[in-house]
Image (spheres, rainbow, N blue to C red):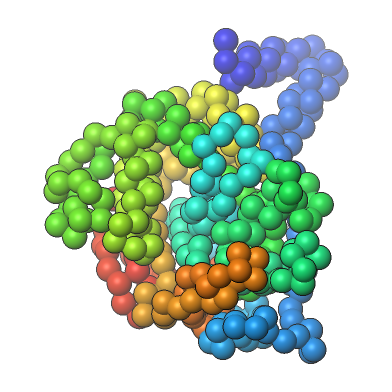
Length: 381
């Protein structure tokens, strides 16, 4: 008997008891407490640190990335009436989604191979996923005491430095790697997250296999080159889906496009009639293999929303490619020049502010892909 089945039976029993008195009320209250309890340490509610007046750059920091931290939108927000949220949600939830490159069953180590900020809107029934390149040279709080004063590293290393593996855990907050990565995104780009979910490679493979694989469509020759698959429809198991998602033979941005294809295919499978009824059991099966501070109740709300999203209301978006320039910088930790993206952080902060406000990307109802001055965008059908 699965944990979900046990919970359902227990709940029915408690409701029956409630008919005869206060014992039933106490039991229901106990169930509610369990359902609302986060499955892991929560992300702290950070106060943006900003940059002190005496702050100076780390030697070699690209000048285009320097700028004062601001969370204030630089655009007008129209006043409109907001529909009532569905599925028991509370309006907008922002989740930091992390794909760790660890293949073990634990989360003691690993870099953040995939970094996505997910804006879930229960009122307008929209999900928008913003990708952050891992090769951004950023300030990472709390690491300088452990790295001889070095306070800048690549964005994906913020996750590793917060994890509890031997030689790391550079800050003591219970949220560990996800929390330090969330703080790093906040300090550098003004990202504000409510929750996190981290999945390592082994769990991803098992999750895809648990739904009997995904059907991935390679739409054209460009995608055939980046994915390594011929044009057409392919049924992939977990290992094959992971291989496509990690393929970077055509560069980091091409890998993001591969990941978008995989995510859209996985989303389509999870909302299919045969699979949607299995979601509670899937959540139960994987809750001990996924690092998250979401509660069972919130996971159920997200599963409910997934079944009610209109076509085209899932968008996978990236910052405009023309903002980024390939560069290299000397890393004192590795004692060598490393590859990074040189980009104006103030520009990225403006996009993030609009993303949080729900004004970027603009809502559409058609399945489109493209790259322009407003960023690269994929709409899952």
